Image (cartoon, rainbow, N blue to C red; front, side, top):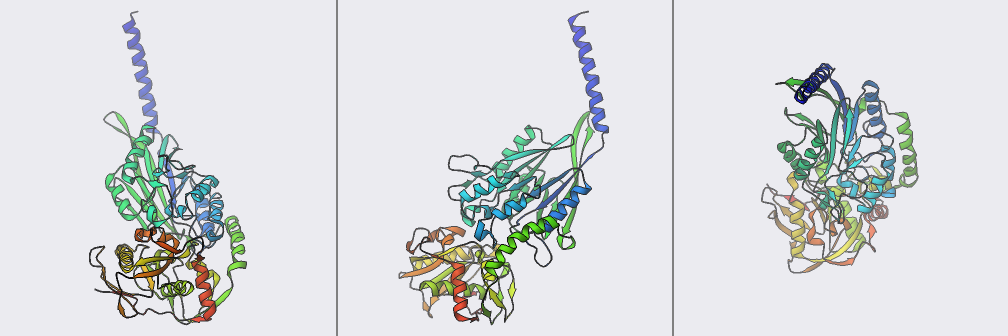
Length: 505
């Protein structure tokens, strides 16, 4: 027999074997994959009978009991802000999340609220992958402990998951020397690398804002974009890319049921997937007893410190997100007044994004330490700067620059009255600033009380970053302590919306 014949027979045998394998794979039953997705969970306890880690655990456990292949994804923001994080810098949330058996978590902007060293410490404590492919240290590498991506086996298929963090972290948090690469550029790289490694399905687990989400969807590099950051409850499927975001605090959990399969097309096998969606209201889920008990240990620790009455409010206080990020708010006036009173500064300025409890206090409500620390959970200190009237106007322009987006930089003041027009171009929205009824002297020097986050350039307040520190963060006092003392000294407070911020239509 010739060598050619032997090769021909071997090739024929190999071809037959390959056809049998392909046929066998094609006849195999489709594989079902269930993805449980949530985002922006820093509150361990439920609120109003909804959300929190115990109800989330119940949802995850139920899905695992019903399905063979379950992936649990968390799109970031866990270690801050919360009452307990003011004491342990978010360690309790990692300990509780470690009990859930997460497949992966994206690194959110709030993971950096206590600086990059604490962020990396929390990453090291996690027993699940923390993904942040675009989180880059000063050496140009991904930050210590984080991973860019993982591959998960689902039957005969592989699912690739990589993590992204919003570029806004640089101004919304305190990442220090950590920088963030462009999300589209990194998504293209990661998607290509995962597909080269064998992933049939690629997921971006992304703590990214609305504009970044839109860009990633237009790009089309991934099959699923599981997002966070904007606190939206939204599921969308264009036929090419699936998008999901699950509100916040595990009040809602998105469950995506995927069918993974292969079909024959022109003699080749082609991978296909199709989704179905379920949005679970956790108010309808009984909390998991073990997670509820674990969370209660931390809640009991808090109660002994925080459930102390400090005074009452004679007027309504509204700290809802849409209020404090878009207009003058009585509670923000109270906070700014306390900062000004405690420091003796000419002017006080704080950002709406630092006020977090998202609730209404009815007139006559007795206020506690817990209430104030819930509103001001970041542990910020009040610093005092020297700056000119020109600088104050520039800071206010930044504060109003993204009011249409509900950005946390929205300013609240004491010692000033401001007229602004949000319909004008950003940077040209401040119409008038007065102090004591007279126009602000742009060339005069004033003392400004603000929080150390803003003084460091946070939320885009770069104009404050290089100013003379009359009182720096080392000598400063906690904002929350100043507010607590201010209320306790007065016994009863009655802040109102009085025209400090006047929006002109």
